[in-house]
Length: 390
Image: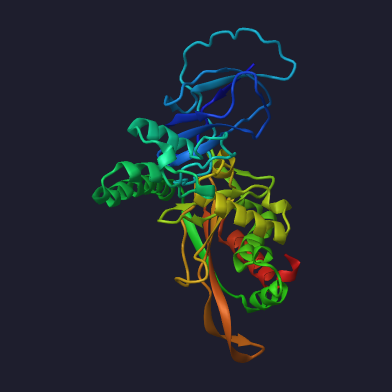
């Protein structure tokens, strides 16, 4: 019989509040199933199960504050007899391996259609509506499919002149979470940085030809090329891909590419594209669209927040020429991509107008050095120059 415990959802997370159970005693669960929703300082997060079996007992109550490591449920393994568990002696919860940092800030939207007659709403919104005695059926939801979100409930219950202050308070909490993790990163990780300006005109020309006549949802964007090139470079230069835990670097077997996503209304989250090394370019683009959509709807999973092995952060189509990022612990590298700019460039011995992008690699000196970082950048640039090979 296994005890499912409150997982750590960030390097600075100490606990969270249980706001919804998505399973009941007797339900069968498999690894990766979403079984609960927990609200933390960073937002409401879908918690995934780590094992297979049958739920015997739910040991945590709704609205209960649970520290990391606290028991949440008992799960019987396949074929295991249902017997009363032996009480465990009280002990300090064991320290769980430190996960990759992520900054989820949006509330979780419903993952399935609500029963007939029941208003679609996120778990956090239901809890808050109960606290404020707000009838969800009277609200106009701003979430996917018209689902009522936490902000809709609080906006309806607060006087009109209080709305900006309430929104500012939510943003303040998000900024606290970001600041805590980034401060820890800069204090504990010996960062070093290498930059290179790359001619992306061949990639843009290839994309224009490839996307001609394609439906909007089938087009490939430059960002997908960048993510795919970073993933392939990470596979070749393995010291850039993994975690630094307990005083040692642990190279990852595959690449879970964290993709920085700007949230509407402010904030940033970097969920991981799980198994990015096994994806084609088209699959990478589809995966990025899915991550962006679910990140902005508040439907990220715990694995996407904690299992990233390297992160790619891009300024998009407009903005500054370069960015120098802060590594998400316990990862050891972050690829920062500046916005494309047209610059004079030497092509075949002549000056020509070309679109270029500045790429900056932030790396952890405990896991790598400048020569290895230069190899990563060189491999990245080579792949961008031949987009048809991605």
